[in-house]
Length: 597
Image (cartoon, rainbow, N blue to C red):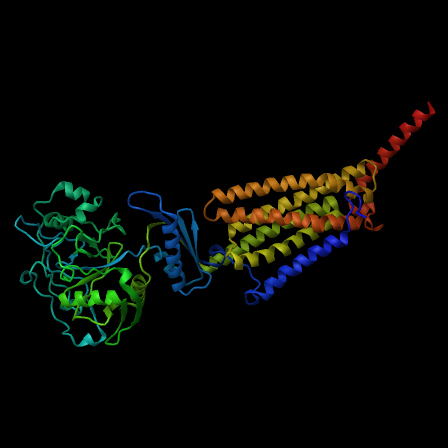
């Protein structure tokens, strides 16, 4: 026979709660290598957070497919850092990269779109702060050819491991002795042995319109008109942001800078222009026809022939064929490794390279060689990204933030405890016990969510838990105040509990539903760490109902059945009991008077 409304079997409810706790902690300790710690955000353990905003040159909305592809590729790069706990999460059109730990600085470069291509270097690189010689009206050159002074950046070379016998220390050939279609490149020797830079003359016939459009118009820096291209080389400012970054046309020449902003390069197209019907398919004199999709693998290694580091590069089958043909046609010429329109490296081809493997050598540090290898290895992204947020937090600061959050939560709990003990006495003790058990179940859920969905607890999440303490305590107060109202009406503690529960239950459900809806809406419309606040607030609200229904109510019901615990002076219901006695006396007296009359 079912008990009357409001009457429950407390042991049954408490046993259900115990089973839930046991099941949760069994999952905590039996999975995840026995680790019982929640996953912390970078603001609590230190690390790097980078938010990337996708953009397209035409301003169109990025497609879901492109965003998901970009997320997958960047995730591969994140894993390549070798740091555990790193993740990439989509947030609308943003990709949020979090890399915890002290060795997370590399995350700031993960947003490079890696639109990789190999372009032949035309002429000599020009120092970024120095204008080149003004063009002449008689200059003619193949598409993208421009003559520049013979000044070169620090040398690098490309070749097979066996190419180390190639002549070293040779000065760069004089530009005037070279055909315009076969420009020289920097030598493999140290920079001290390269040709001395000549002092360029000031430009004399610069078009002001072109000067204004250099940093704005794609057509100017990728013009097929040699004179326009030369003026672009004159006026390009490497200190300014590049609007062409990641959006250069591979079928056109390119005037650009190196990644450090030290030199300006004029580069040939990667592929022959689509309208070019005269170029033979096997002509690799000016066109490398190589992109990042032709690369199979790349790795940074110690230089076997000297100090520093080299990058060993392996091409796919078709890419190896292209590379062999291109190097055969361009021995002692420079080829630029171009990432998102910036020159990452410009080694000299020492000899024809067959077999699909090559080596890029130069004065690389380990970090530079690793970055270049990663750029070559991980391929191209389908979108360009701007870094809208990048922050690095030290582990020490993260530990201090965690302590501050725990102290704030402890202060909030202590204030609730003091209030409950002062105002509710025994009921206050039940409130404290309920909050402690709520914390026990929340901790287990946090650990499991970190493993299952990658949820990380950050400072905003801790703030959500602190706010949730008040919501949980509010549910207890609603129940206890309704209980006092029943006692004031003359009922005993034991008879008041079921009636108070039936009447307060709907209010508790309504209040928690409002809190949960608010948290859900905030989670949907918020970005960044505010989502963590909304998630923990909503989760705590749901778990509040579990604790109130399975713990608080059964414990109060058990206390009401004990003669000792139901003592009004101990239970905190003394004032309400006296008011109830007065109410009964007044009611009884009134009824008697009516009978006597």
